[in-house]
Image (cartoon, rainbow, N blue to C red; front, top):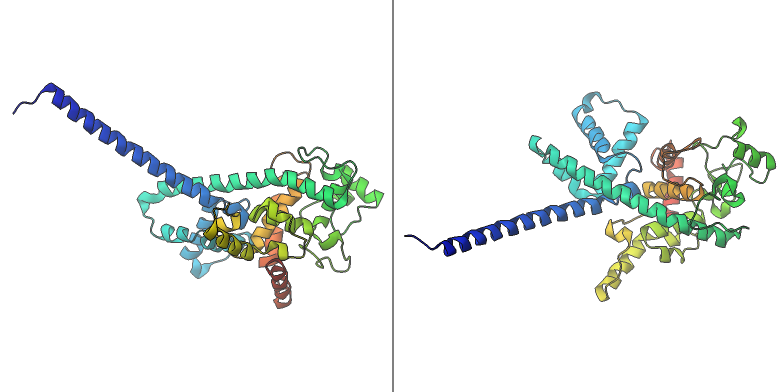
Length: 341
């Protein structure tokens, strides 16, 4: 039975509108998925690995699963595998989805990994930017240098600054000695600052026991303040006094949840990424961020003169995770207890 051209046109318009709405919904769904993976990725640099990719950790886990009968591994591979374990703790859905992948899903997984990386690098950049100003403020409050460290620029930081130079100086050297100060600034062979030394800013009260370089290590007020700023909020960092209590992420999470039941509040990073305790890799991340904030380098990079940030991060992680015996293991456990109590 024939119909009018007007009626047919209306039906075609209705079909096109329906198709357009379906396209919009599909596009919106893809955008929501992208946003989800970018958001999830923000935990990776902070809690898992500072430099390696998600693909590196997955590949190492696959290698161990496929060749476990004749497995040999390097220290770097062991660190990567521990990173994969931490990754699955931080992103528990990831391991299950990897196990369900078939050949046709590989391209989709690459897109997800790319979005995770976007989130990871964005979070690192955000923290670098905020700590640039915050660290300058804290150093000025703590040491009252003259002139004060400018919060909006870095040219006057690093070893050119007496106070930043002191905090960056390896613990085994005395920055107050002119020979040390001059040698570091001139980069003489006797005073090469590398990732293989612990800088002074890591120590409690910024003092070192030359007979025991592990005494007070990783207990500085500056670290606690930075940790609070990254994982809770900059305002909560003002409450920290450097005794360990200021870094009680678990308690901050609990308080945030209690407040959210009563009123709308801005959730802290630790709650968003479901961080239940202070971890070695979270500490290592903050250490590298503070070191960078004290330096005169303008943009994030792996190597600063003779100092390698990636190797430095690995040294801190290994200090916690690759302990040589039970006595050292207990010392590390006590240090983590100090951070989360």
